Length: 392
Image (cartoon, rainbow, N blue to C red; front, top):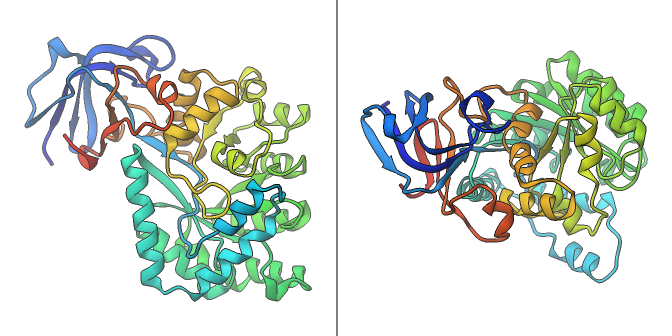
């Protein structure tokens, strides 16, 4: 590895308060050195040390690489019919997932891999340097295992989601399917995953069955995550806090008790604006959680049914416009918030020793992510000092 100097940065968001202004450690006219894949120096451009390579940022904004803590990338098929139906007045229900299950089971490993690689390339182009990837469209022992195996080729943040919905063949035997998810399927999948997740919702899994699944996963060393409170108020958030989940995701419908529980816990509240947009759900009030002191993340929820986007910038713009978040809060949510949701302290910031993951925007300020919605502002995405998308 060689050292790389990122020079003449117009605005640097470090997320390290002692490096600059405010909680995001904002620094102007800055420079940064990545050496052997990690941040080695941050300071004024005028004081920049020598390095093996130099990137002239030319006054642009630089941020930590974005952390997408919720994505479903292993699938086949298309759900445009579902989307069209929703846009003409049909309400969303969890059962649409089974359409993708059928297509995924019929696809080859090569087809699943190629589709996922295409989506990962899109994430990189959008500035994402760390992302989570779930199974959940196989829902059989064989298909969940191969989904996780392919996901593991793409990221270390792999989530076992055998409990996405109950597959058609088990529609009349939900408890039998739970036995499979906590038995033979878990045996096959636990060695391939870091996380275990459950969709807690009418049409998916109730709290008691979800608790059984999460407890079984935890006993095999997997850390819980929960799809919670997406379509209506339910027990998902309280269950996530009870089992010590790293995150409760969606959290569209929250009671005061849910807000208090999240604020008093280490469970990150992960908003998924693309899903709320796609299913025409009411947008949640992020201020309730932020003002209560809860940790908040934003993620794409990239999936073929309800949030078919890899644009983290779009999610930032939605959160600022519709969730009541400031641009600074939204940017923190896709960097430090996402890192917290994945229990990572090496990403989401540009402190000395952190991973050399960063994004260069074709803009003078990070606020442009919300100010210019839909515009592809990312010039280059760098992971551990290596360019993975865009240009120098």
